[in-house]
Amino acid sequence: MAGITIKGDTSGEITLNVPATAGANTITIPASSGTLAVTSPGGDASFPGTATVGTLSATTITASGNISTPSGTVTASSFSGDGSSLTGIAGGFSNMDVFTSPGTWTNPGNVQKVKVTVVGGGGGGGGAQSTTPTGITASPNVSVTCGGGGGAGGTAIEIIPFPSGTNVPVTVGGGGGATSSPGNRAVTGGTSSFGAYCSATGGTGGFPALAPAAGACHGSGGDGGTGSGGNLNVVGGPGHRWSLGNGYQQMGGAGGNSLLGGGGAQGQPDQFNTTGGVGTTGGGGGGGAQNRGGGAGGSGVVIVEY
Image: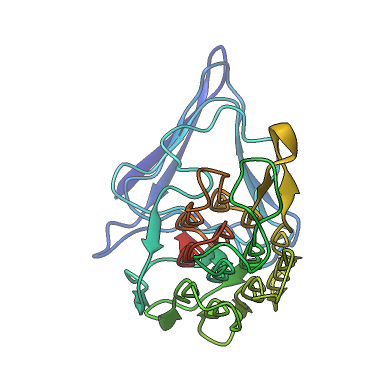
């Protein structure tokens, strides 16, 4: 006979004699609301094997001390309480994969949820002719030709539940190329995506400064891209038009800012020969030129947190 002893909190005990049979013995509480309780001060319930209390949702296991499963697993449909005393449990996302070029995100096998941030490529900055327009005298405070800045890429952010073992194709939009031709608009940035879940288009290119017969001409900025499919969809910042500096010197337009990437600097009045700045990685728009070529837009990015 095998003995199971239940001791009281001060004195006395109850011993259950159970036939010594092969395999694990079982204590069964048949009542639908039955409870297996250890209520003595500091008492512990230790289950080196498996403890089963009924099969109905109303059954509970309670203890005033600790419930220990040294080599087992606690499985339940829900837990109550604020969890403030829990230890050894990872909370939130603890890993991040950053894609700056196309690829595939592979679930390591145990990820149930991911947070994805998708940013499209920035548009290129508008160019401007490289010579002083006809009828204009080259002087620091006269009108020159200035291109507009490129728009920034849009952004989509989404929380996505996954089954284990899921592989998702990732597309990263490139930055739009700039143009130095007076008559051509800069190139629009590429679209980024995370499978079919969410995507973000690139910013449009800045407008160039056309070559006037006399006087100056200035291009306007490109529009920002748009996120879609996310829990949060953000429109990228538009590219800037030309502006005035000190002494009424005219400058190209700065590139638009995305959620993650800064726009390229505007072409400055420096003897009529300043190119636009390049947008940063993360979808920044390229800067517009001042009598030179515009800057390229920054490439997009896809970030997976899990």
